[in-house]
Structure formats: C-alpha cells, structure tokens
Image (cartoon, rainbow, N blue to C red; front, top):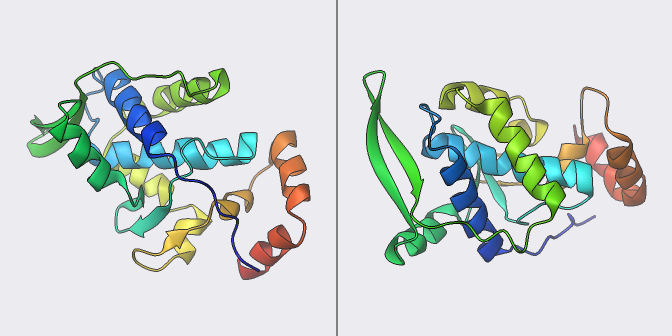
Length: 186
C-alpha cells in the first residue's frame, strides 16, 4: 500500500525557518543541526496532533537525525534574497553554524495551533544542544527504520511507545489498512 503523500509547501518551510531562527536568537546552542530537528518535530508532531504536517516536506534520514530534503536548496535561495544567513559562532570551543533570520517571518499561512506548537517546541528544547536533540530524534521509529538518505514517512509518527492523544487516535483510525500495514513493519 503506498504511503500517504503530502503536498510540500516550500513557502511555508521558508517562513518556518525564519520563525524558528528568529525566536532562537537568544538560545546559545541553536545551530543548523538543531534547526533541522526542530523542523522535523514541528512537522511530525503536527501530523500526530492535527492530522497533517505544517510544511508537508519530505524528511530523510541523515547521520545526525531527520532533516527536510529541501532545506539546503531553500536556505541557499533565501540567502541569495537576503532573507537568511548562517553566522559562524563559537560554542564551547566548537564552531556552530547559526541560522539567522534577516527579515520578519510571514505567519499569515499558519494556524494559531501551528504557531503555538512551534513555541511549545522551542520552549521544550531551549538551551539544549544539537547532540541532545539529535539523540532524541534517533529514538524515533521512522529514523531507526529508514536507510541513509531514505524518506521517513509521516505515518510512522503514529507508531508510539507511549499514550497518544485522542486526536491522534481518531486520525489513526481513519487510516485503517495503512496504519495496520505500518504497524506490521515495526
């Protein structure tokens, strides 16, 4: 049975990158790896809580955890437009590639729930290092099951070791055979 396809919204990903970068200005360990993981958590948690991801981007397995496939081309494009930059900073004797928003994010295409989810995740991971957030992402079944650079399907987010929300249970029930097929593979 084919995986559920989501429409990737590059514009929404751009604005989410700017939002997370702007809101993380005071977070000393915030860098490119942490940005990747925060984007991942926003999309996959939105999928479990709202039934659809925020950006619909395709995520791949990389050694440091999941990351959106389109992140590098989009951030390069944003740099060219003067909307975004990567600054080199030192953090405990190591070089940190720090994403920086050079303009205000446009949140007009985001729901209040989506923005709230972003803020909850930023608060949860504030002050945590890329290693800490990467370690956590390595516990995600989708990352464990995917091969290097392989796509991680959103439906794997429904495979959970702990209790799910009522919304996630209701959404899982609508998936029927797709959810059962996914659970058989884990």
